Length: 472
Image (cartoon, rainbow, N blue to C red; front, side, top):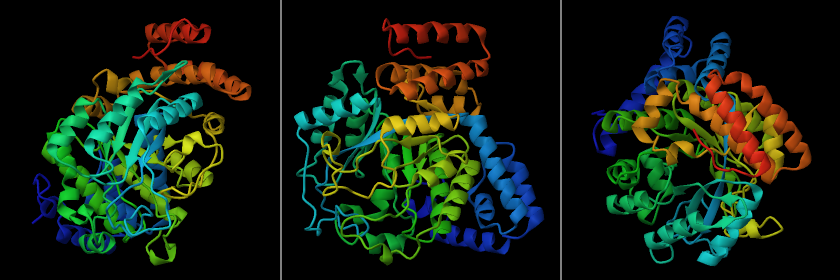
């Protein structure tokens, strides 16, 4: 039986409910009156149920699909404006004891060299990232209790926060590591992490078992219930995601939204972020084995429908996606992207882009400055803001502000201030000129005169070097 407030994966991700949802969506994919009714509800910008959103995703009516894309753009603008948050992944170790068939880190892969960064090597990686201008990292590590115990992760987090180089500092460390215990989540919370991220990979139980034949990750229930344990351990913000292409995308979409509904029902706060990676080439991985891979148009509609269904959540797209693909989905719902990313262990300190320890091929290989300039040329405001986390606006406190659309009162000033830090400290001259003009154009969107006055004063302090790290 489907029970969204249950702590059991088999109840809050009830397979019978997902299959019934897909049948309902198929029956109503060209039901214009029903689709209009769902769109009318969606225009209230309070979200949709998994069943309602699945009808929109399945919709075959061209005029209604145009409305879906237009509504996604409006909701993205209303909640997140033209700001795009930048981050970078930092791979600590590719030792892993799992047998995931879609990941080159799987334990049977003998062609990939295994590597684990020392704390000194982590310091060097962090300095290289700070020299790019990054302020926010997502650390990644394979699951291996011998090589990558929780103590190693905690020590690495402390090392990252301790590195201060010139004007650089990592102000937020998000963590993407394997499902663990309530006690270990409590320790991560005490270490000062931002968001805990864990991809479900697939919500389809049979496919999950086939794709995870060995290792602790093969336990579907333990993996799926990880976010509950994380929240019990005091972590306010969690990030969901599936790897689209492992199973039928409409099944994954329904499961993803049901997981979000579960978090709302059980904890009163939904996912802080939703990531939308797609299967892509990697060492020892044959893409031909994944027949459910999705095309760009389907990917764009997925992003649009997630944005409509869960309007408050941050949405993330990585450098798995090409420049063209990222450009398409930015306006449809994406609010965070990685830039200048290396997906290999120790990749930021190597001059040549290393491939031998990469988890997946990077499609968008541009450097961070080029990505920032591209965003600004598209009239987006690149943001390195970490203020909410450090001001205690996390979990239900963040969600209350976001759902009321009040978070923008903080977000735009913080985005402009952190962009100015980047322009003053790291940008090329061309990027700096474009950025300075962009900042001035965005003054008109700050409606409070006192806030605008303070922003202008603090921008001046950043430019003359007398101040840093201002936040609203």
